[in-house]
Image 1: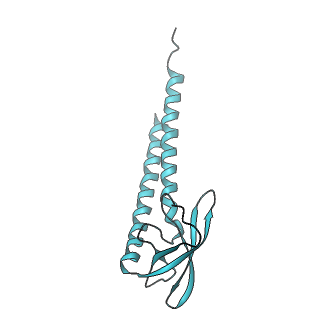
Image 2: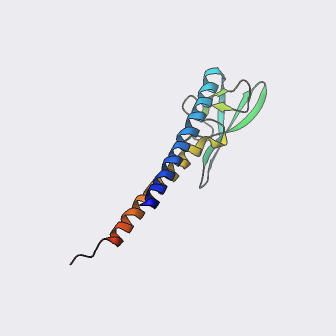
Length: 142
């Protein structure tokens, strides 16, 4: 029973971390969209590895050509290379951009999804472990 409670507590903490990172990131993204300058960006590449998925976009800000990696905290839509997007440029940090529909530049933007997956996994392992140990302890029928 103690392991189950510990596992569920770990799942809860991982869930809280996921929500916290998401809310901080969403606050930053919203601030950029609300106060940033809209500009056109073009998707130049699509990167997908085992742990993360992001797009590299090119855009112009403060008279300079720039590139940035756009990430999304949960599920990534398939955006074709070459597609134009409207991005908002942070006036204080032109290397930071965001879109109105949830994409932004910090590398930790996709972290809430991973922490949520870990939370679900920890809860699953705790419950399955509890059920398995319950079955082993119950007397055999018959």
